[in-house]
Image (cartoon, rainbow, N blue to C red; front, side):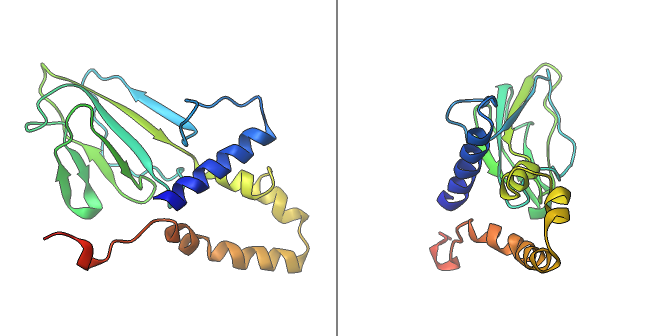
Length: 173
């Protein structure tokens, strides 16, 4: 997803350029936040991360010592998928629009998770010239506000255009 990656890079570069006192979670990460779920048997119940960038990705890494054939599976509810997700595996998922969870592991096993993501509000903050949306809207003329609303209405389609599509003919059967 090179176009989506570039959007993350450009946005965080602008954010950190505007406020150099901000610290990155990792020097080369394109994500602005991370969560460490230290278990000892981490379970995430079915949820959607509504605050994340709506067309963005979330990197989820499974860690620990568990049998991935018996537990710890990643569940993507909207896709109807239950995926073996062994320790050390990482997946990118659109966590703001896709319900997800993970299966339990045995009592004597350990499962942790490490997740990286970026709130959609940070992208809006940068897009708005480093101000809240309501402050930006209140500063616009009626004509500028109308143009801004029309542009915002197309944002979802623009965001999806950053994610490459695979033609059915390219998928191995």
